[in-house]
Image (cartoon, rainbow, N blue to C red; front, side, top):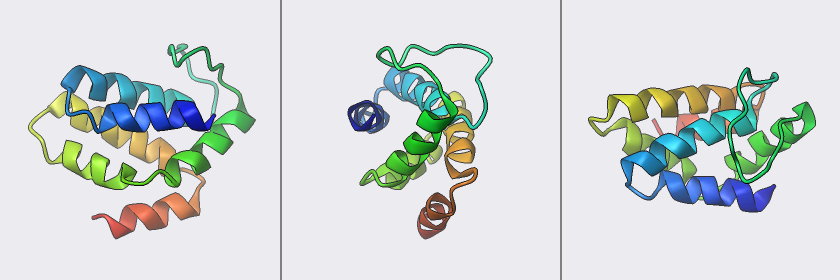
Length: 106
């Protein structure tokens, strides 16, 4: 769902540590390639393989997403860094377009 993805990306850009952590957890859930062990509250969205595949593509097209990731990785928030790296790995998994975009933002 485009609105949910846009909201998560906005939370990542907020600069608020709690929002960043919550957004990274939500992103991992939204793009997981297999059924997550735990449900994460993402505005009522329920995980499906088809939905996660669509979300990976939708996230990859969000303006500023990769720059947001980079800015979080460059902070001294080790929890946020780990969560964003986890989200990035799931986002790039099985989506060549996203991998190319990650390489553009080293």
